[in-house]
Image (cartoon, rainbow, N blue to C red; front, top):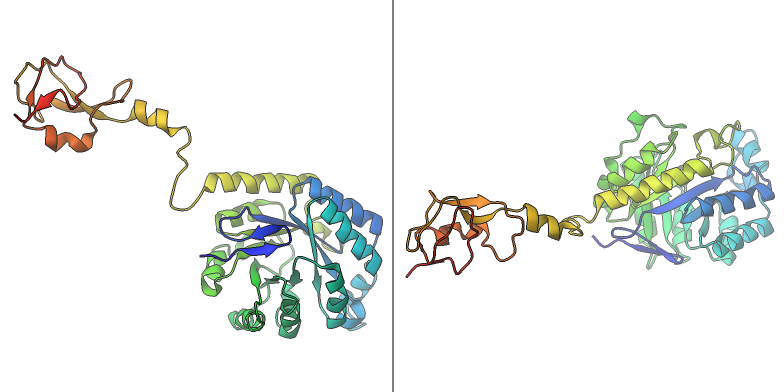
Length: 341
């Protein structure tokens, strides 16, 4: 299946390295210096991208909600967001963000992000997804609270836009998500149903789910990132700190090596093993010239070096032939050792 997406200077999809996103979100708590350090630490830990949450509280939440209070107290200014994007790019990391309203989407276009994120809570807001797709950039959509009909509608909304491009995240909107909610087998289900690059947005504690998700077929991993996961509130409790994130990245890269490419195995280093460990045709008793070779005196033997010796697949051809010369026991059989004359 060809579903790779160009995402800034990188690509996401089957056959590409797993795309790893450090979800900074609002764990900077509105402090720009903290945000800068988070970007630097995420880059050093091996992230391919950082993601913010650029949410105008007044346009997204009623004033009496906890979300309104949380996001009102953690906003970056437009200039700070722009500087965060510039810093990220200078470190070789792709910057993008979650956006929840048309006005914010309009000004974010000027930052030329490589794509846009539609969170689980916004998945049913199909006009936002469609408007993001109209920029010509990929739209990455989380499915945490979605029914199948919701995903169908969101994918259709993006697909209805000319040249609309999308990718999906399996996601569990439980914080932190216990193991029995991960449903990692659904990664391939989503990928096959929609024909889209599919990843895993990890809301669990630790890095186990992320590494397992790669084995389950995820081509993207999004993981919350914090300088101090022990801090209360925001997304700190389900985040990884820089060292934990680096450990997760290393685990994912090791998983990629172990998984290899579907339909084949690495042959590196196997040629010598095959030559010395494989079985070949040889005689198991002393054979005189003209003696008939058959299953009573031909064996499948391992020799110190199999170069030039007949493989077991030629057993039937050798059976019934006459030895052309004396063959001491354990002599290898080559094409000069027998004839059907």
